[in-house]
Image: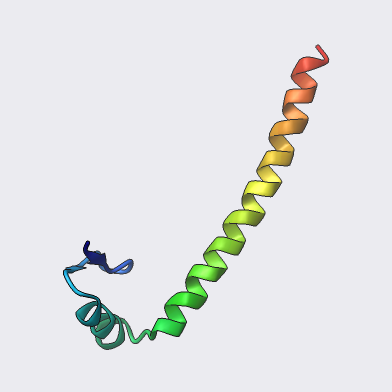
Length: 65
């Protein structure tokens, strides 16, 4: 398993150098990364819900024709 930096795409074979890289090169802590992932997940869930509703209403329009 490799650890890939989501910011510069550099890869690491071990977790410790990966976290050291995030801290030294991108000024991020594990807590910062976790917060970003949680925000991404929340935004993605919201987007999926909104677009699912649009897709359903679009399907209903097509079925009524």
